[in-house]
Image (cartoon, helix red, strand yellow):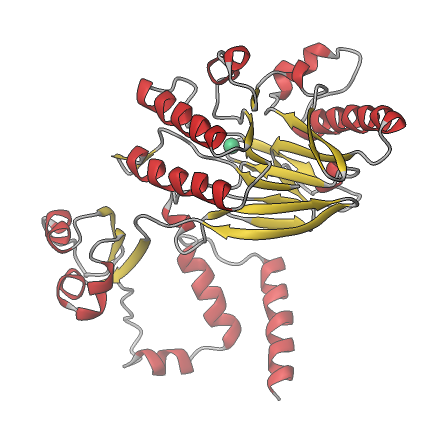
Length: 385
Ligand SMILES: [Mn+2]
């Protein structure tokens, strides 16, 4: 069985004030092309289909268009809601959808898996919509369900029980779950503090034990947390922090025994992202920036004082310059004549500590961090000897 794992389409998201609908339409068209070429059995979309709980008409159009095209390409589609989606809005047409298109937005749907079949037998696909702990816990007042981790632990218990019951009838049954969460590997003691990403609390990796593949969404870059637990990331770059990270989806192959392979399927990047640092004059004139003229540009200007009309000037060369910050190059008034001499006058721990303070707006290294730095630098030094 061949599945395509995607997530975080965020239909309707703007990029620094610019609509991304046309670019996303192109990329999702490629995704449909992959489905057709690879003769996929199903495409899985693990949440954050829309960017907003109140999507506009053209955003519904793009989703409907894509689902119809996937269905016409002969693949089933299984979609779950993420923390950005309104379950009601994403799910309201679910009952009217064509055969082979499944939209899972309600907790009651989790234990009604979509059962796909191939020559090796059945595969149960469980879609877990994003479940807000504050809303979900009322379903089980007898349980302690305070965190997203506890909610998913409870839900996955249910999935494993359901699987065991089904396997009593169909012994070779394989399984896939879709979940929208911030999964991390933590040791038995748990993380020392609450970690969250995008307002979503962490979920321990172990929660996904007992299934052949967990198709995760929420993190916008691809990640392999375990061979059978992965993030596909978003199909489009939505932030300069994602610059240079590949866009695509996982092609997941199941054989008779479960996960056989997961291969990366690259999606095109309509307009790459570039962060350019230098003086305004350098950015406007130096030939080495020519390659970025049609890219989304985030400019970091290092001029001593803020140049006037910098954005308008930058957009003369880089029409898609989206953001601009002024970060003057550091000035050293300590008597050292050049940068190299300045560096020679400092010890390695001092250079690292100064750097830390600089990038953290003056927050110097704590005693613990200083100790760690000394230790690591000593290891490097002995390795260099
Ligand atoms: Mn999300």
